[in-house]
Image (cartoon, rainbow over all chains, first blue to last red; front, side):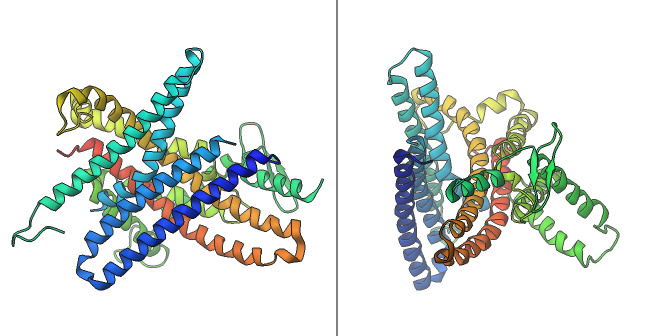
Length: 71
Length: 77
Length: 253
């Protein structure tokens, strides 16, 4: 585990996680605001939020897999 | 309703695992045929196509739900 | 050996499968046909047999005590997971399978958080075996219910122009295996990553001494997160198993 390549791969995976965290955090913030403004639209907002979160998570996992392969 | 949440939960990982599986299949085909990277690229492309196909199925299901209207003529939940 | 290598060796020992069970002052040497994770599986199965076979009183009309606690979870699995995904009749028939999945995975996850035991769901073979059970039910349940022709017809998508069907039907078929594979990787990666993070944070205290004391607080936080994730991952595995089996056995149009 003491090689530079492995260290850089781990750093890359961490950066991917930061990106995914920021993206899904902003998504959740907008969804919360939408639900707070109009509570009767909660099911629609929830469904769309889950789909967008799944897509962002897909991208994050692509990045994680590439970082794992680069090790 | 829970089946929809299940689809959304599993969508991200299904896309990533699909890309990986197809890429590894392409890589294995490359090894068997002596070398080069043509089949690996085919595998990556097929994996991305599988990801887009899953998203298309979900969007189709959503638009079918949005096209329905309940008894009073308002859009269904 | 220097401290980093010692911490690495400790993490590898705690997380990997081996024939030696390292307890605080004893080292139990296991015979050839058992390994540490195998002992965990046997222990969890025995605890479940004890809880549900012996201690669960079926004769009371109104349950109280341990029976009441277990009944909350059993009814949750039956109503929200099994009947919601498979319909009423099939849901009631398949409830024992999903209850077994839920309690077995929950028991294994929780046992991984107790210091003496190891996390057996952090072993890819265990999660792969569980996902193979789901795959078997998906394939053979669908063949049993819909016949072989119905099984093949479930892979043909609707609403596509006919030349694309030759590409999409094999992709749908491979997609079934991808779904099962994603089930195993989701549970395995969640459990393994959680345990490695806890041990690595505690290892920081070994390497850096007093300066790393906030790492202990962070490790406590991650430990409680792991407790929540143990329940969540058991629920997600059971829910997705039920959903995939339901999609194959009752294909919607």
